[in-house]
Image (tube, rainbow, N blue to C red):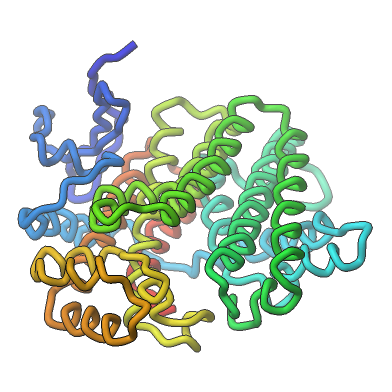
Length: 420
């Protein structure tokens, strides 16, 4: 049934304001802030929708977003490294992942474990987010965790949520292996990419193997809603990659198309995994949607910064080649914003970037424009909306819950200030 309604989660927000979750007939979900619960304006309604409105009104919206991060200093008091909060569990997850990807055929085993080996497993950003989200939704880690008395049901639930973190990481790594084949990449995480080291065929098969192991683990949860969510994620990954490969000239230069593709390729996995964490915990639909919105906006902010770093970072810091997107003809937010300022850049984009002179010319236009800054502002906007989702969760006096929520807020700042 299509309907519009406003549901309010009783949570006093940053700066003493309330956050409201606005449900629109098109099933997009938005937040707006108000001291008085008045209906949002049209521009406010579009803040969180998958379809974004991009115009010269962005600075005003950025001012709204900046206010959230500026005022959120109270929630990040007593900052603690988010990764250290779940370090013990991350270590357990890493060991389990290495055991889960063991294969009978030695070559396949070597390929499947390639990005799970010690020193090559990356930052484990997604498992960290999911474990923190589990605690933020009032599911504490039993102490002692591995032995001794404790709530058996809580332990069992935590183990199921850890499975979501493991499944998510396997899906993510599988997508990296496949992407590297499609992009003909030669490095990943600072080492030779699997396709470069072992060949395209084995890299594709290793990715398929990881997806199959993720499916087995997912089925063992025996939760059809969670299975459906993460199956949709795999569909989104394929859809997003296909969108990137088959763009028309008009689509390549569309910010709306870019953001939809970015959601499919990056944000869908973390957002739906966060929602799965909430569903396993038996949370309400409203709380599950807040978990989803946190992951969605964090994922969008992460990819926007990634796209900026492709222009501003170095190959060494990124663990992959810089300028890889534009050299593959992929147009991202910084260049899209630059095209708004310099319409003549569109002709350069349409010619393609096989000619290095076109790459240099495009970079010259980008340097003269505010494309990098506007892309950063957009990333900050989405990071702030992720903060708003955490701030809208129901109150809790549990210190572990509050600490995890502060860590989730801290992660949004780390995402938009990272340099690699």
